[in-house]
Image 1 (cartoon, rainbow, N blue to C red):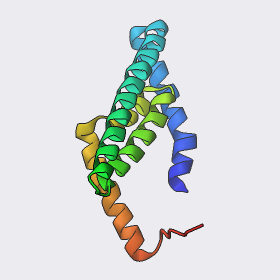
Image 2 (cartoon, helix red, strand yellow; image 1 turned 90 degrees about the vertical axis):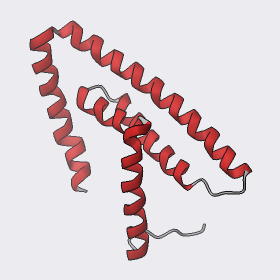
Image 3 (cartoon, rainbow, N blue to C red; image 1 turned 120 degrees about the vertical axis):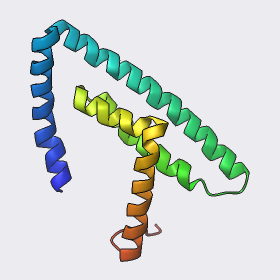
Amino acid sequence: MRWLFLLVLVLPALEIGMFIWIGGKIGPWYVILLILLTGIIGISIARWQGLQTWRDVQWQLSQGQVPTKQIIDGVCIFIGGIFLLSPGFITDTIGLIFVIPLTRRFIRQGLYIWLKRSLERGTIIFRRW
């Protein structure tokens, strides 16, 4: 819950501060242009990576394997896409970290370890419907 509080309250305040600070340096129209440009580039990368991950999932399934890595990649790309959709430099940076394969690898490893520990402790429970 603390992370949600941080995300909803503190992050927008930091983004506004960044807009004002960068706008003072380069001008408000360039800030708007940068926001649009980073959003478009980021979403394009997220779409491309998402399609690539989907192809990898299909290939793994056709080989009779469980696409564990690709599923976690898909979750990371989805989270990154959400961050990229919200306007701001901080959220765009976070989104790109989740979307770019080189940096996503570290997040995927951390997520995998967290999921494994949570399942072992019983803090995450899967139920059948």
